[in-house]
Each structure stands twice: as C-alpha cells, then as structure tokens.
Image (cartoon, rainbow, N blue to C red; front, side, top):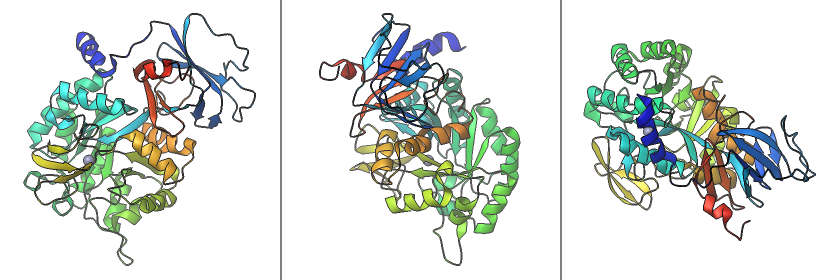
Length: 429
Ligand SMILES: [Zn+2]
C-alpha cells in the first residue's frame, strides 16, 4: 500500500524545507558539473521534479549545453518560476551510496522503518540522494524481517535497494560481523534472503571460497542481483573463478581481505585487474590511505570505481556507543571500532566529505569526482536512466557546493531538502 504510508514517510525524508509551490525552479550562475564537462555560468531549470533544461547564462561554455538549453544572458526570468542565483557555487549530481548501514544515530539493520528513514534523511542532508541500505550479519530470519521492512521503503521510492552484507562471509575476515552467526553461502539461504526483499535486493556480499560460494554467485547473477566479493580469505584464483561465475563488485576493496603479496596477489589484484569488476572504496581517510585510493583508481581506472561510506549509525551524529547489528561499537574522534577486539566497524563518513577528499587529496577533476560518487554506482545499480548525473530528463537530484566544496544545499527530485534558506540569504542573492 504505497499511498498513505509513502506520503507520511516521504515527508519524513524530504519534508521541512519546502519553500515554494512554483512549477519551475531556475538555478542560475552556478558552475554545473555535467558528465561531459563543466559549464561555468550555468542555467538549470527544474520542472516536475526533473531536470528540464541545461544551458549557460554566460558567453563561455566549453561543453555544448544540452538540447533545449536557454543560452544567453538575455533569457528573461520566468515569473512563474522560483529563481535562485547560485553565482560562486558549484552544482554536482546527488550522490549515490551503494553501501551504507546507517546514520543520524539510526541503523538500517534495526528493522524499524522510522529508524531507516532517520538514517536516509541524515545522509540526504549530506548530499546522498540515492541510497542502497546495507544490513549486517544476523540470524537469517531476523535479516529477512529487516529486508521486508526495507523493501517497503524501496517500493515507496525512499531507498534504492537492499544490500546484504553477511552472513555469507569468511570468519577470518569478518570485521564487525558477529562470528557465530556467519553461514556458508548455501544457495537456498541466499535465495531466501533475496526473496525476503521482494524484488528490492540489489547486492549480496559473499566470500567465494566458502562452500556454495561459486554456486551462489551464479544464482545471484540469474536472479539479477549483484554478487559482490568481500570479507573474503580467497586466493587470486578463487576470486577469478568468482568473477567468471558472475561477480561484478568488490566490497570495500582492501578492507576485510588479504593484503597483496608479491607471490600471492590475492583478491585485491584479481579484483583490480578485471574489467568486469567495480571496486568500492571507503573514502574516509581511516579505512584507506589516500595513496592507496590513488593506486586503486589508477589500477582499476575511474570508470570502475565507486566511493562508498560504509557508514554506521554514528555518521552525522557524534561519538559514543552504538549497536551495529548484534555487536557494540565505540566511536571516538569519528572512528568506529568494535568494543570487543577493536576492529574498525564501518565509518562515520558522509559522501559530501568523500567528494571533497577525492578532489583535494586524490586530485580528481569535478567531473571525475561526480563520476565515482554518482554516475558509476548509478550505472551499476541500473538506475542511471533516472539519477547519477546532471542531464535533461533525469531526476533533479542536486548538491550545491560553495567555493571550498563545502555543502550548501541539497535538492531531491526537485524539492529542496536543506539549504534553500542559505541560497536566499541576502549575501548570496
Ligand atoms: Zn559494510
């Protein structure tokens, strides 16, 4: 029953910052980061939640504006439109996070819809307009219940899918997953989880070396669900076998897998070198040194990289004690570690920070940063026809950044989520 529930939950996600009932919103003066290049003084029109026109307000626009563009500074402002002067700002596509467990003190693994919305809303306020909710290892029936709750939010358009991380992972590389609840990837169990998500399962992370691993990857491929290799102790050859069977993602490459050995290349080299694999990288500066991110971006090429948060509930919230599935996590100075054993337990990253780091520390151009934070994951998830880039016809999912690439405002499907009051402030208009 999408109707009423969607209205109630939808306003929980995007409500609170609606500033106008105008049919059109026009953004002028900003630098627009398109997949083909940057328009320096752009003009972007939003109608019915979608991007209707992209053009330039200035004389110099190196990339060709898209069809329908209202080029030229003389274009009169439409009196029926809600206009924003974004001079000095940069507009990038809303970020797509394909691996995130929670935020704002709330967790997707809680199995409570309102909590999931708090998490989604928190990341939305940091620019993530498309979210795949990740579960963690738990009892199979409990994870099925969580999937069922999350699937309703996907059906309502509030989340983009469900990612099962665990329980089909290696006990030697389980990180923040409870060891006694891990299971071999018996295809029947894999199918049970996927079925519980009622068509909204997007991805399952598993270790291919476990009993049933390769068979389960084949099954996932058949079901149209992404098989992701991660939390694995597999050697190089076993990972290649997993890729042959249909795996297309490396779950947080480098983390929770053996390091590269010069005589034992292991999963990392196999996943980096194979064109069929997109590698997730956690861009928080805690999980990976920036130089290692550089190495992965060079090794895989930027077409095959997706930056993720792998964030847990403390993201956008603060230090303290938090549950992560059945385990306890302590967050100090923004670093989340298991209370027992001290393993790093997810991040407190948000993608606006990941974007800034990718530009400042990894030297990515704005177009390339938008690619690894939005377009690549959108393509992988099969939603690039609607989101992932600033193009006419796509959802108006936009992030407005200032000249230091700090987040100023966020729009989802044409509605301002946060920041529109800052855009209206006299200093900026
Ligand atoms: Zn994770």
